[in-house]
Length: 211
Image: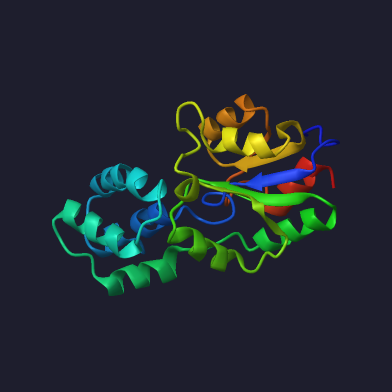
């Protein structure tokens, strides 16, 4: 258990913690994902998605351009109805996400987000989570707004967050080990948590903040 006496702020990653990672879920979910719906090779789709990610996660972009560029890389059009069906089937959140935020806020803990994300998927993830009025807008660190990712050499999202928050009193919750390491190197307290893991989100929050 983490020594939580001094934690007064929690920054959640979004994809992989509070919701699925949108592009991976949309494309690679077995059966319902676009790769299987369109009969495409998963490894090829994964490679294209990774290649396109920096172009769309480090600045504001239009979603239509994403599907156009992905289709060009595949050499085929991606039907809008297939995208809509895949979104309906694969995009989901942890049902406890809103309650976890409310629980923290109710105990006087400030809550924010720190996420490598796009300007079109982040709003959809927020709709999946539901209204979370307790989120502090000045505690939201998003790659597409700030132009850097968590793993950008030198100054990335964690280093930017450390300029306005006290890392020693801030817990970062993330589902990727390399991000946990980078956050820790910036002085943050850390908690590894993945959507669908053995420990539920509410239990992880209670354990991490000593509730």
